[in-house]
Image (cartoon, helix red, strand yellow):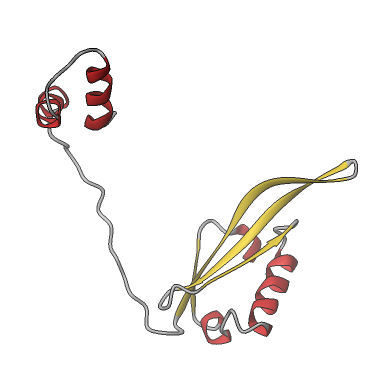
Length: 126
C-alpha cells in the first residue's frame, strides 16, 4: 500500500500528520527498496522492426453460440504507429490475413515484416 492511501486511512481515523511523516515511517518499517527492476530502452531505425501480439477481449454471443474475441496489435517500433484488427481466431491463417490486410490498407509496411519482428510467446507464427 502506498503512502497516500495509508495517510488517507489514518486521516479517516483522526490522524493530523502529513505525508512526510507517513513516508518516513513506512520506510523505517519496510526498509529501503532492496532492488530495482532494470530495463533497457532501445530505439529502432525507421522500417527495421515491428512488434506483434494478441490480446483477448472476452466473448461475443451470436444467437446461441459464444465466440471468443481477439485482437492482433502490430506496432511499428520507430514511429509507434499502431494497427489493431479484431478476429475470432488466433490461428496462423488469421494472422496472415490480418497482416496482409494491414499491408493492403497501408497500415503495416512490408519492409517491417522482412526484417526483425518481436513476439511474446507467439506460438501461432511457428
